[in-house]
Amino acid sequence: MKKIVLLCASGMSTSMLVKKMQEAAKAENYDCEIAAYSAAETVEKASDADVVLLGPQIRFSKDKIAKELPGVPVDAIEMRMYGRMDGKGALAFAKSLMKD
Image 1 (tube, rainbow, N blue to C red):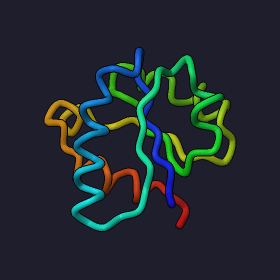
Image 2: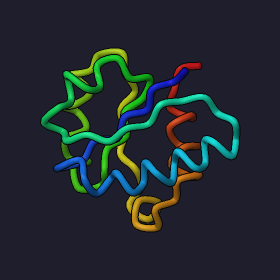
Image 3: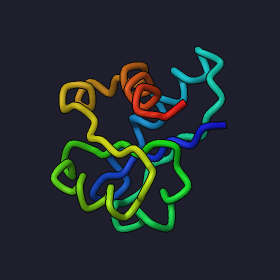
């Protein structure tokens, strides 16, 4: 089972996108765990993730977060995808970043 973690400033705004991504994963029969947390919880919540997606509001932290999570792919969700709460697109993006 893959672990997908979304990080944002407080962990609240991404929770809606998590729900949409979970719906998309269920429709695809894709076995994964998707959760959202505050960027302040990066190391304790995301160090064992298969991929970490950042909310657009913290994309400036990408390099810092990537250093805190060696070996974990980290990238920011595109602003338009985030604004539309495109769960299917965000799931596809997460899958494209994973190593396998």
